[in-house]
Length: 138
Image (cartoon, rainbow, N blue to C red; front, side, top):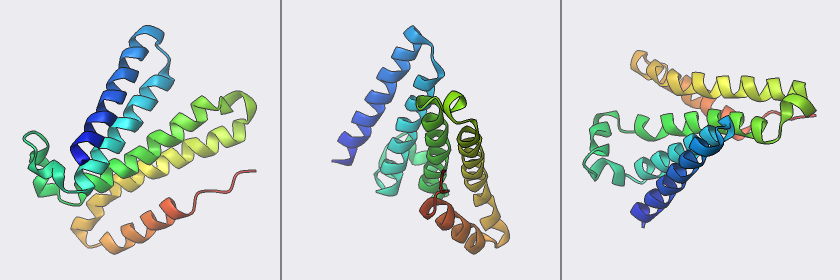
């Protein structure tokens, strides 16, 4: 079942990428990245990705294989929302907030390296706060 979900998500991401070749709007790149990162999250979170030939190379990364795509997906989702809603023109302040939020998600993704120096609990707490408490928008 997970293989079907992964395949459907990756097929959708590939189709959107092909649309981008024709229309060349960065919104399609954001959408294709978002869908493919979600597919990576699903396949690694369930553990099936570690049994597949190419994706099994992430086996030494264990939990990083799913939480890094989740954090990067949050970043891409923030960029996608601000582009699809055309926030640059309708609400520049909210546009900047979503840009900062995307940056926070990227920092959170790379903060997983802090686990190697013993700060994993702090990173997990900050990550839980970021994922559970989105900013209130005016």
